[in-house]
Image (cartoon, rainbow, N blue to C red; front, side):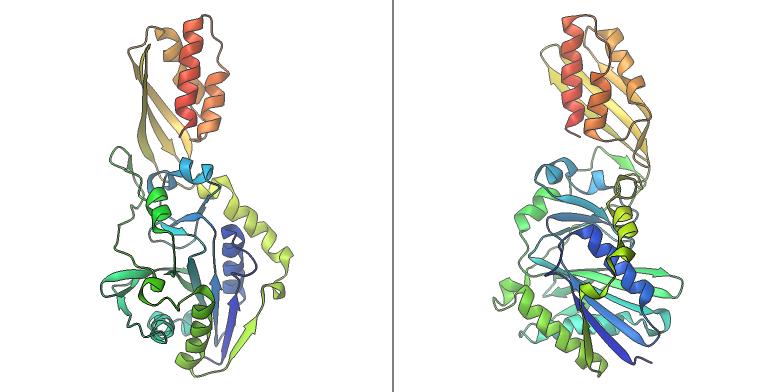
Length: 332
């Protein structure tokens, strides 16, 4: 039986995905029996992938990072999503006996209804309006602890969503889970009165109305920073964000006046297991030696480029091949 409703809006305090995931996990680990915690938060310029996805496949990692964006991996499954400050995220945290996805989704549907918009749950993961998705949902359970979280598109930059998400993966074969594109809509397109602030207020009200209880608001300062530090390090680590990727192979190729190079990488958990090279370049011995310096390295452009640039060269032609190969790999 639900006896206590707790509400936290964190988007005014931080838009860092790693801290937000640490806060979310902390709330889940500390939710009481008979309590539902409703958490609203935002990430700035972030692609978030599901637990079993491959970041290199799901987004243009190089472009994202060049633009100051971040790749983050969540604990839950599901597909890749883009977050900016035109998007708001929600989380419901509860013990297994109090966890009710249908009721939790009702909080979102009723909150949107306050703006004259009729939304409906679609399948298991989405909330739509006239067939267009404004909220995708994902779920996580650990023993008796559960959470259900999702996105709320308010005024997201759709051009950035397209720019960063859904890189053409036709040449990449891997064992992860590929995201499925969907028609999406910003809530502000349907009612310009919907903003992050106004929707927050509406959702806080609908939370209390759906459960028929008063809502107790807490603040991010109520969470001890010391309790978050280790998990922030975990969520921001390369090993979690990239190294957790499933096995995949991907070709990388380029062409110059001296000839072409085509590398084929076999990558497991972010580390290069095998490399093959195909080339019509005349510096055959130097080119054939490149795969050996790449094995065991992270599948990360700068690290691979450094490895190639560390190779000894004997001629100007080999140095030209070295420079071009490093430049090609650095773009990954």
